[in-house]
Every structure is written in C-alpha cells, then in structure tokens.
Image 1 (cartoon, rainbow, N blue to C red):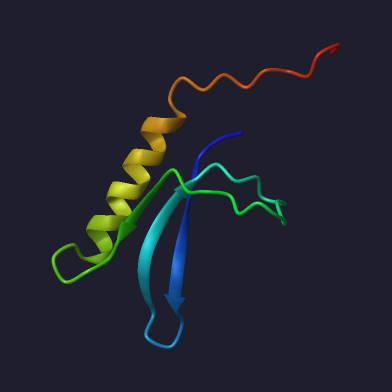
Image 2: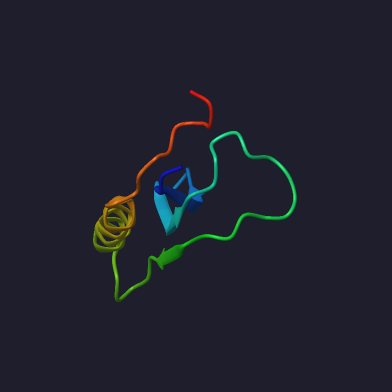
Length: 75
C-alpha cells in the first residue's frame, strides 16, 4: 500500500481546491471506520493552491520512500 494525494472539497464551478490530503487508503475502500489522512494541506490566502499541492506531493514522495511491498505469504 502506498501513499497518494487526493483533493478535498473541490469546487468544480470555480475550479478551486480547498485542501490536499495525503492518504494510504486503498482505492476500493468503502466502509467504516473512516480512514484517517496522514496529512492535510489547506489552501488559504497565505498558502496558495500551487504551494499546497507541491507540499502534499513532496510529503507523499517522502512517505513512499523506503516502503517495501511484501509479496503474499506462500508465493
């Protein structure tokens, strides 16, 4: 399982993103409990969209370094 960046509260009409979330939630996960994010980068007046997206991607890359995906037992 690897970390990835998701957008949160995306406004389609304005084309803006409220925050970027770094998570390791599986792509097909639907259910309870709610999967907590590893980090969230809020877009604001001080920290613009481009800056927060870059920070989220950099943090995601950092978390993914050194992850060794183990093959299933018995293969």
